[in-house]
Amino acid sequence: DYLFHCNGHRPTGETAFHRLMTGFGWASNPLLPRLGALNLNSSLKVLYGSNTWMTHLQQSDFTENGVKCQVDVEYLEEAGHHIYADQSKLFNDAVIKQQGERN
Image (cartoon, rainbow, N blue to C red; front, side):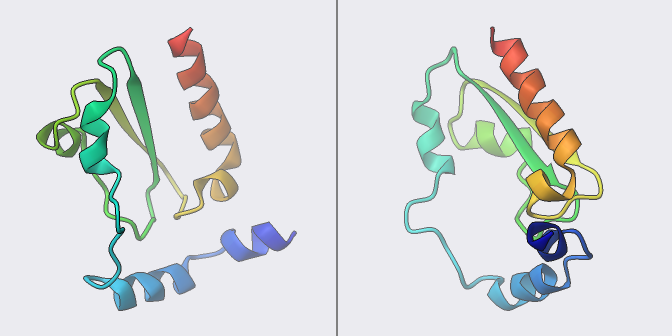
């Protein structure tokens, strides 16, 4: 119940946090520039909630940063930043599908 009530409503707290943090918080060792070192046989599945406060990267953003493996970007409708809680079925289905495609 706690997790649902933290994440199951409109993301007013996340929206406020995003507006306050725009241009302020940066990762000390960003992941995107390091993804270019991935094996070409790897594949990436990037999941975003359609209502997340995070920057939405497109497939071209990965290519422009040297990622040479296959990248698939998907947006889960009606989900915020915590897609595993907001749209658990869609999230689980996407993860299971990605795992099945790998085998």
